[in-house]
Length: 274
Image (cartoon, rainbow, N blue to C red):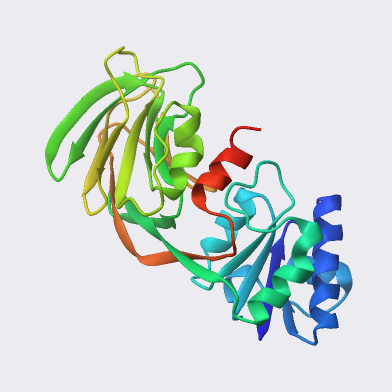
């Protein structure tokens, strides 16, 4: 098999775990391609993240590293947790050897999760595995926005913004603002207001095949451009002006994860309650 390794090698403990992964793969006489930044530190050839071609992508880090890799690949991801909570991760570093053996024996499950595609007016944005937010660009300054579902007005609110999340993203930013956790098998999106200036405003779960539009009615101030931002998976931000519209719908691309024995509820119990 051919394996690619992705991480943030400028972080000391992550670098050490990435080196350990390389050593474990070499012991098993596997073909390995390294992301450019990591390769440079080892003085070996590498490839940019966007050009990695492998049967399996191994990410070493936290959920942010996984999302970074997902932007550039549809290949299965084996996620090694070298971050904080690591909710999406599957393997702790000390078990990487046994995890590699199980993949080589095809003793795993391939889990597919949906993603979201989005546009800012006519500009195509990257696909999101977790969420797309429209949020104020100014701390403590409210924005006014309108949410439509399949053309029907759901609500018009003032607040810090709104999150449109997949089931995967429901355990991320959405959870921190009081949104519900969705099981990955639930074909739905959750729309969660961020600090809405109305007690009755609550998160809403909608069918995953819905077309969602978020229109910025008014920014943080009437006289300032770039008063809000559209943010994709916490990785990329785009300026949103009054009158602009963010359109969100299901993507044809999937996020693919290698899974072993633990189920979703065990993951919630062990990673979100500790």
